[in-house]
Image (cartoon, rainbow, N blue to C red; front, top):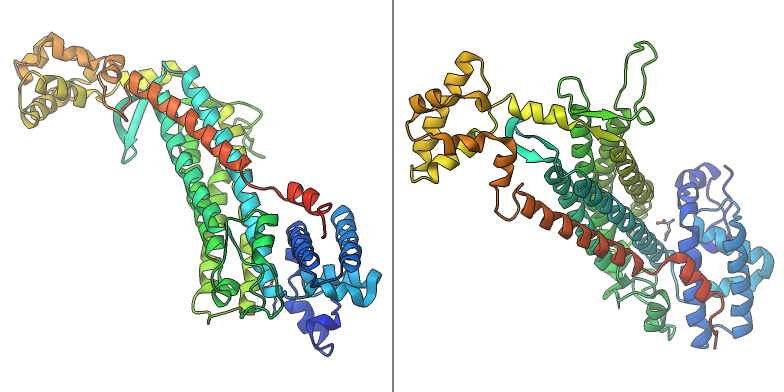
Length: 477
Ligand code: ARG
């Protein structure tokens, strides 16, 4: 790419290699829409306050709208200069009025916030869809019983609905994290100039309202060097993709012959180029793999910011690659996870068989015994003896005979033994947050409500298209 340089950005004498090396245009081209919306708001304010004549503002606005429509830019140092250069090619000197009382430092801070705000809205929409899908699936398969795991060793029987609500709970926290990111993005940076403000009688409040920000940033020196909102977004994304990667691992495991709990539909299972029998869970492996990128992006941003002196530093331009990748990464992974889960078929016969062939109801037995007045630790030891007796004879706990039970502890009677039934085991969990059916029904309802909340939060975010359509025709007087 041959990068040109307008006089506006300083010396013409820069070595072409240096210019090409320091240009951010290949990346921040993606911020064009944000940049145009920001410029339209700034221009509107300049015209309305009389800082820039209205006819010039009108002419500049028409050019900004043309760029919005065709997206054509020549190679310049960055997206901001490329927009200015294109207007200058049409309007000459008058184009320069647009940059009155503005620096690229506050301009890029605005573009990035607008970008993160928009991406948060998209991500919240995806989370809402995922949470809704998990809740619907939980409602559709309430009867499926499967083992839960601690230390990846069989632990206690749970319902599939409970597992799905557990996944949902993670993503609901991600929606909360994104709402926090949105709050951080709520301060308008534009108007602080390069670092110290401007002597022009600008009206930041007007720009704030036009761009629908909640407040103004309070200090320009801080504003131009602040990328906390980017860090927060990258962290929320990394955390969400860690969640996705954990769900993905469950699907990889559950669809293996070793677990045998689920089957992947043919349209998401990938083959092998050599082994004809394979049905590989590549989709879930890629989801898991992509979480590494999100962690990398967060790390990259953190390291870029570490130790920077106050104010703007050009290092900040290196936020572009990790930050611009973050939003699309999050939405695509969440979308694919939702799609992938739709194509996972659990096998209720095999999952139940796994529970029945094991000792996962041991805790239920101990609790049933303790509920008869035996101290829990004593009950725990008694059931431990029964488990060992079963293991010696190669029997699952469900097949323990009343004689074996009596031998372990005479107080393990028929009533206590009934707790061995996997469904009874699940049914006995009545506490909030447990796998019992009533609790799970409440969890599903909460998940649905949280999905609605995420979707409402997404809808409340001002979107670039809407801002553009308002700003392209708003009064300049
Ligand atoms: N391309 C720059 C960036 O993205 C814009 C700000 C440049 N400011 C400056 N004074 N050189 O960070």
